[in-house]
Amino acid sequence: MSSAGTLARLMRVGLVLAATMAVPFVAALPASAQTVKIGMILTYSGRDAALGEQIDRAVNLFVKMHEKELPPGVKVELIKRDDTGVNPDLAKRLAQELILRDGVQILTGGQWTPNAMAIAGLTKEAKVPFITMTAGGSAVTLQSPYVVRTGWTLWQTSYPLGQWAAKQGWKNAYTVVSDFGPGHDGEAAFTKGFTEGGGAITGAVRIPLKTTDYLPYFQKIKDVNPDVVYVFNPGGPQATAFMKAFDDVGITKSKIKLIGPGDITSDDELPNMGKSALGVVTMLQYSPAGVRPANAEFVAAWKKEYGADQVPTYFAVAGWDGMRAIFDTIKAQKGKIDPEATMAFLRSWSNPVSPRGPVRIDQAGDIVQHLYLRRVEEKDGRLANIEFATIEQTGDPWKIFNKK
Image (cartoon, rainbow, N blue to C red; front, side):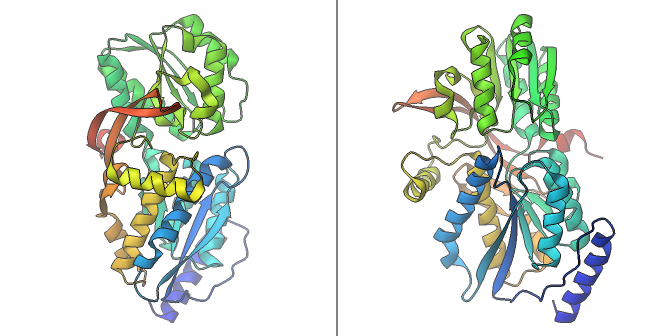
């Protein structure tokens, strides 16, 4: 793109975005053809900073190990910003600043669905590619033609889990989810899969994200005494708080089965959960205990970099594959990022040797990948999510059910 074209683009974007935000317009000089600027918005502070740290660590490790693969003279510059948690207004402002002031050519991160939705809206006007790594709401990729996903959706993990639960002979289920977009998606997806298989939902509750006392909610579930409880929370410390509360009210020691997407038994939190998590079944696209050569290499590199007692989580592998997709895009364009060419490349991108197994991005911008049923077991003196069944190459069911 010429300098005149770049300036015209910045002026057009500034006029559109300034109407919705009181942020000064500062036109940045075009980035050098030899430096690709990547803006990354994650949660680096607050209760859920551990989740952002997993993505950040994966991105840093990938760049360290693979920077030599870039075309001669081409470098990447990561410009990081902290959204502090679920805060779509702040995420939107940070994205605007990254586009207009810092002149980034690619946006990534997108840890939370509400934040990713806000960022995605800007990319439609700015024509800046956005690789969202872990926002699990299905609608994110519908907000702009400049968005793709390298993580997963809650429909992807929860609809087949509902089908599986019905096949176990469980007749009634209770759903308990965190009250934001992915929780609503997970609840709807599990309910559809379970009821289509002949099961019934006997109760449902949505818990505000800021809640810290879960006992009243879980005591009611115990009183109802369903066959199975479908649980979703965003993982990290909240996953441990949920599990300890289930243990405190006696559900983990009862005949009631706990299942959910893999967020509820985050691998980095399993040591904090203790034996109350044993036997919990989840569905997810990744476990660090997965027996795949690429995964063994990934886990070994992670431990070498961050410590022998550290493990990468599903957040980490989404960040790792996100950077693989970005690097492959940079290599394909020899460092000269064109938005349209970038999106055309990303919507046909694939990686047959991801740590989670073969992955690809479809024309809707969603990730297609293997899903694994996992059970928390004790292995070598530690708790781990052990994969015991595979559903191969699954896209986002929500897009299929809502085709226009």
